[in-house]
Image (cartoon, rainbow, N blue to C red; front, side, top):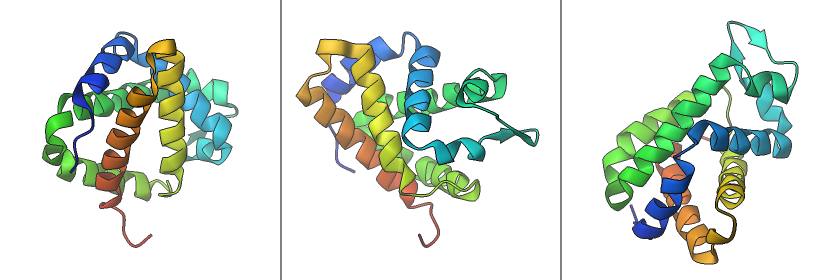
Length: 151
């Protein structure tokens, strides 16, 4: 696994990680805006959300946001040794496939991640920072996609 620019990743993540729930909510709001068909995939206790707002404010979904932000945090922590996360990420890929996520949706997730970072960092989200995060995210998705069965 190729290593993106670690210092740019760490510096920018140190800002985001101060308010992971807030920034994770921005990420998912953008994701549902870009790909509304993903909303029905999130059901808790057989309950379908009636709106994006309903989903984003539910305790179960807020827990999901925390988990996603922890995975990003793990990738940042291991940015110089992403291969140490390959098995875990492949398993995460399998879990996403089981609930109906398509590999093609990960490009939208990537766009949403970059959107969240830009909103959080403002002018500090430089082209070099964007490129580093794009590379990191691409590496994570590549590892997750190894958990997919024949798509």
